[in-house]
Length: 365
Ligand code: MRU
Image 1 (cartoon, rainbow, N blue to C red):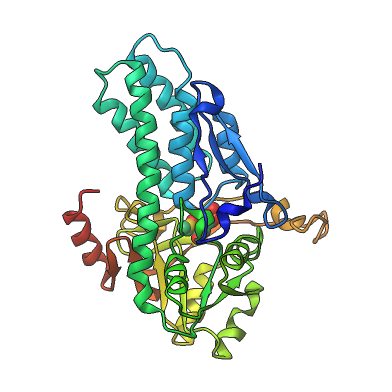
Image 2: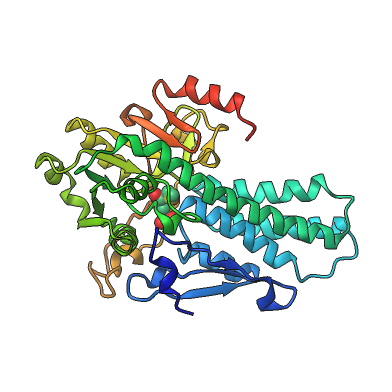
């Protein structure tokens, strides 16, 4: 199931299709297994709860918007082939499935956002037949994916004016095409700039321990023809000091009401370094990444991952057996360090708390 052709033009899509025909009336979620990149571009097809849970948990699909899309499509795929006696039975089954999928990763709010939206559609149409509800669930998931694709384009257009010909842009982890339905968040302005002929050089932090920056960001930018330079995480200060970085753009997994933003571990350090070197630091994220239930970033749950990701991450032991490890997968960048948040509706500038409150009171989200 290799499909390199689809990656030729822009970033490419991680969800090649939701293919109901492949599993009779069941339908399957089809996506790139990102754990195999950059060596292999291989798609997997999933249609049962534990397989989808496992794919999200082990980062076969990852990145906040992408796991939201995967969960919604996955829920639709799991519910679709089951025979229900009535709609209440379907709702109970969908709630149980959604609760399990939501448990796969705690930090990215897009996951529960997408599942909640799917369940809400069932509840709002509970008088419909089970077959109709199965269609509604699939349509909702496909809408979420379609909106995600549109969102990427809009973030790209709103972020592009920040970029100038010849700029060096630093990014951390992967917030590109592999992390979304289409074009990325942090990388969307880069892709738009590239399409309009600007020469941009992207510095891609390696992003220990799972190397999303070197395995994924460098891979997709390279395939799209964007110049990319991969550096180890501990080189950022030096590269900034050498004047190579004009702008930092990163993604986010959850943004609190005051603008504090959780993203891949290491982002906070990059923001501190950017401030020291007077380099603008932008976060790019859709409205679905905001969690207005949280006043500030202190309430954002930080995923803790297994020690072996650090101890044997390079396929061999890199530390003695007897030592202990600490492996938080995310950190929270305080809003004071953020120059602006690029969303699908435009740029949010400080002071963030009143600006965020204003746009969300106006938006039908
Ligand atoms: O652990 P990951 O690879 O899912 O972490 C991903 C990130 O931190 C991304 O920067 C974030 O989800 C934004 S994706 C558009």
